[in-house]
Image 1 (cartoon, rainbow, N blue to C red):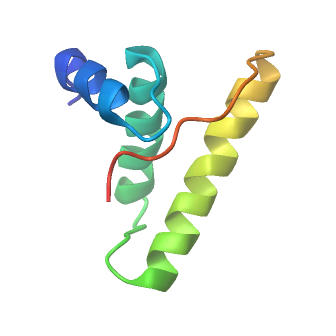
Image 2: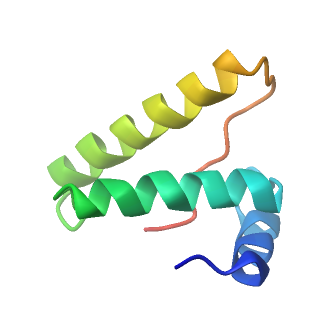
Amino acid sequence: MLCPEVAKKQGEEAPTRHSMDEELRLLTVHGVLHLLGYDHEEADERAEMFGLQAAIVDGWRAERGLTGPSPAPTVS
């Protein structure tokens, strides 16, 4: 479950400030990756999961012609 109010706050506080919609996309991809068995407790797991997350979000943004820096993960 995603909470728009939390997503808005996290987007505003993220290193690359971004919109609630961008944060909801990040959280959706992040959650699905967890459901698929990915985790980020160890450094190698984190690199793999966040790399895949960035590739998915960046691909989605590119297909829609969105420019500018991709949102940085707010989940650690």
